[in-house]
Image (cartoon, rainbow, N blue to C red; front, side, top):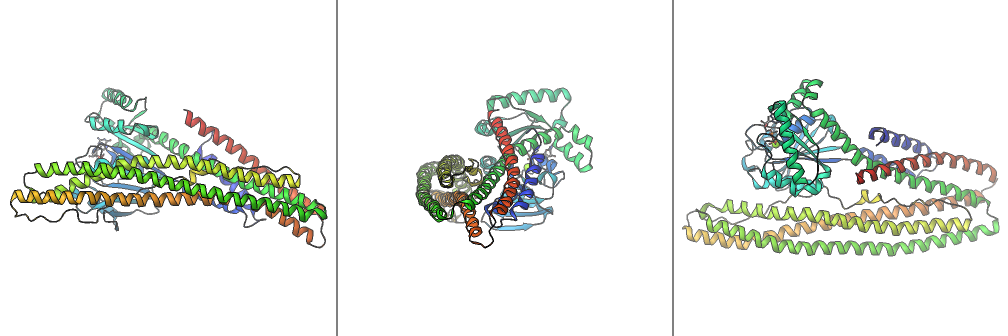
Amino acid sequence: MGETYAEAKQELEALLSALDQLRSENPGSALVHAVAAVRESLRSGRFTVVVAGEFKRGKTTFVNALLGAEILPAAVVPLTSVVTIVRWGEAPRAEVRLLDGRTEEVPVEDLASYVTERGNPANHRGVDRAVLEYPAESLRDGVILVDTPGVGSVYRHNTDAAYAFLPEADAAIFLTSADPPISETERGFLVAVREESARMFFVLNKADYLTERDLAEAVEFTADVLREAIGREVQLYPVSARRALEAKTAGSAEGAQASGFVEFERDFRDFLLHEKGLVILLSGARRLRKVVIDEVNSVDVEERALRIPEQEFARTIEDIEKAFSDVLVAREDVRTLLRRSADRLVEMVEADLADLRERATAEVLAECEGFVLDVEDPGSARQQAEETIRAGIRRHVDEWRRREERRVAERFWGESARFVEETNALIRRAVDVTASLLDIDLQVAAIPEGITTETRFSYWFFEELTWTEAMLPNVRRLLPGKMARRMLLNDVRERVPSLVDRQCGRIRWDFVQRLDRSRRDLERDLDSRLDATIGSLRSGLDRARQEREGAGRNVERTAEVLSARRAALQQPVAMLDRMTERFTAETVKERVS
Ligand SMILES: Nc1nc2c(ncn2[C@@H]2O[C@H](COP(=O)(O)OP(=O)(O)O)[C@@H](O)[C@H]2O)c(=O)[nH]1
Ligand SMILES: [Mg+2]
């Protein structure tokens, strides 16, 4: 943006205050709601940022450096085994969510005993994820950091976490370092996520280990690997998360500068605020523009309706009302189409799920059967067999879900655009009919396309898989090997299909729920925009009628009041025009570059 996000945001906030003053003359109007809604979206906009990378590249240290305090447990030996989500809170507070769905508040100092390998070996506490709230400046604007276990870590399920979180994130920071150089696993990860790379930042950590010359070499080498994996030139930030953390804790600005962190932080914040902030500002400005124009129309309608000759007045109102009810009947058809389109999306998900069910069952079974047939001591392999099943299902489901989320979101987006168009046509009809029956000019403020950013198919954190049901029955340890193997094999064959089935059922439920909610949100949103348009035209007519019926009517004096109000509304309209134009240009530029 030509100006900073903060400045643009302030400008919009000032406008909101100005509109607060204006609306007091007409309480209960759509303007009141729009002002509140836009204010809320400025306040609560959030950015999810995933920190990904192989274990021990320094992800957790890096998150601490961003927070400016050694708050998350990083260490030499332990591998973090659990995803940790860090978000703004007035005071430090920690909570863990368990795989069985329960949530427990835990002392912040004790976090290590839940999220590290040493404190929680092989995740025996069954922790699904930890959530830390912390009053760090860097989290102020709604930034949420997700510290993931490493790509290529020794535990399969850790590897999946970074993948699973990526599509729902607004941005990602990929960390590597020179000790050892970027690995084959990391390269594979980058190739797999290359589509997301426009939203990714690349960091070469532990720069402090290297001399200036070695660092330059490491940067060059790593950048080559990145370019090759991602398919384009990317900027690589050499930093020392450890030095940055030390400097920040000690309050040393020079130290932070020397760590390379400052440069990264600046670019990263710019990116976040620009990328996401712009979308929020643009949709806020467009939303306000529409309601303010509705208000202007309301004033114009009133002004004009006051002057209609007495013998024509009732008739004109009747014609306009008739047109409005036609528009509202047509809206019913649009709603029916919208619901049908949502049903078709559910059908698509169901068909895709059927594929997943079949493939996952076959592949997980094959893998587990192989394991059971090869294992040396089948009598005590139950736990490992379970682990294989769990990891297998999780892998299939995560991968499927990643693709499906995108697919559904894109389809939903496309469909929404169509219904926005249909509703705009109705809005235009209502305004045009009124304008022509009253023989005046009225502006049509269409629903902006951006409406869909507020009501899109939401990918908030989808539920992790949970395993409340028993996986495999206990096999008596003392059975002879052959028999134990046969029993275990039978159990695996029996359980895998039903476990896959159960997980597919949950996913279906999750998608259907969210689709339904998204559809209802969209419907409500479209309805309210059309209602607001008709409502403001009607209220202009109503006020004119009351005025005409009242005693001591003074058309000229009322007209003066109205033209003052119109003038007062004109200024915000002009400002909003400028803002939407500017923000739109920025968004387009962004997409092109
Ligand atoms: N020298 C140096 N060591 C670092 C740096 N960042 C992290 N480390 C160390 O690397 C080890 C792994 O760090 P950690 O943050 O736990 O890595 P993670 O597994 O990726 O989360 C720890 O011993 C850290 O102190 C750095 O910038 N420089
Ligand atoms: Mg870590």
